[in-house]
Length: 113
Length: 119
Image (cartoon, rainbow over all chains, first blue to last red; front, side):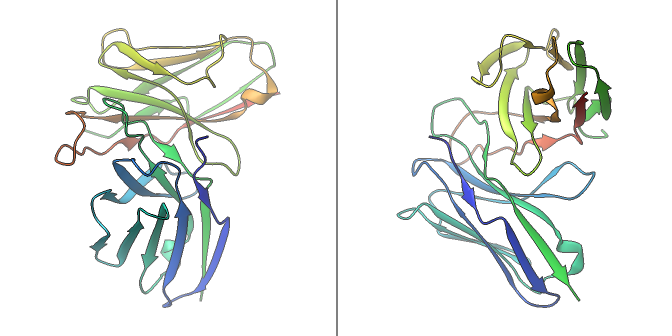
């Protein structure tokens, strides 16, 4: 089946690091993504990683990919209240010529002062 | 370019009525996607177009749903004989697809969605 799994909720103190985890379904997926969704706003792509990479860093964001375990994580350093949102991981199937996204259920990140 | 635009933003309809949503993608984007998001869930793929051709439809897309992209620009999603279970956020996204492969990644940009409530 096509089930991308995430924990539902994460609460962190402002200034701490946040780690959001995801288990995806297809070890052959080409790209894996992290999206952010804030109330009343569309989905915003935060970062993505190619499946031939283990790690990608982009400012406060670090993505780790473990292909063997089909595990993807997003670390947000120095988490701010503006980071409070729902975070979705997503994958694209490996089939030729399709780039549809398969999303996880989302992790709600709450940052408190 | 103002990004992906969806109209209306909100729609309340009575059960059994037909509704139509519109999506205007980013102008040079050749691919357009429709997703549905219910409360507490991630978006689920419905269908996508490359230019005017509808290339894939999810099994979630029942016979009551139809999507078109007649000139390869804007797209419409129609739901006939709406049911309460159709209540959801309908999201549109577009991208400039240049083929699969590690060197050809392109980003899908999402609109703000149309929230449908069937009463």
